Image (cartoon, rainbow, N blue to C red):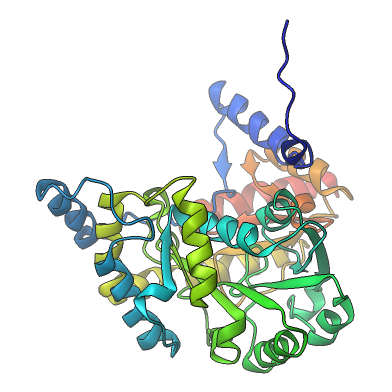
Length: 386
């Protein structure tokens, strides 16, 4: 039987260590086992009504044809106003590109900026796709470790120490997935100065910017605009994960290159989703505040509950994830995740692919009632394992 020869690019991609756990959870559900998932990285709220209505209006108006590769002008103009209003950043519409989710913005950027062997500094624990995208584009991911005892704060001196003649980019993700860390102004300024001094690009993923608790979100582009690509999207803030709209703003030459890549791959993002995103970005303050206040209640409860069980969990300043120390359950986070699934019927994401050994990620984008059940189930497991 003929077997296609796969490209080197595909062969260097690392399989996810979470696949086995995810597949096992699916099989248990198929068997009728009551599994509570704390793995999903998406809001549990419905997309706001005015956003859904904007999509319906667009369909009825026949706005269903191809658009400009970089997105409709109306959406890019709304993004420009949003960046000025909320982030104190000034861009022209041609310095903004819209893609099929934030992930495509990142993908386009890595391919536009990296040559084989270029190094990319990524604070760890990190979102699992950063290093894989870097490798796929021919680059070399260089993790810079942050620590739970420090709330996963980033030390700019550690970034400085990681810079070599091959360094091309620095990835920042604040508020962060999976840590929930929010970088303060001093950290952002220090990293911006490093980028300027060494002629590096900063890729600033700000997808969770509106989900913060008592911390101020700042965009690093305020301190190094010519060295920064700011990435954001509709998924998290407006509960629009399935709509797949992300955007990037940065130097015009980079945006043109990213548009060229997009033009030869996917072309324009979904036309109807663009009009929905326009409505969301233009006016969703009430929804954002409602969701943020609910997330904070959930965060406070799950962190207190996990710590009371002896599963050490730092208090995150943003996003809707916690990283819990599960070594009291098992010293290996993959085995701990399997035990949590098999014995407590709770699905989590092991920290292996986040570079967070001994920890698992739990998403608290779920109801307080579900969180209480999860804590009760995990309490039983901890007592059995102890």
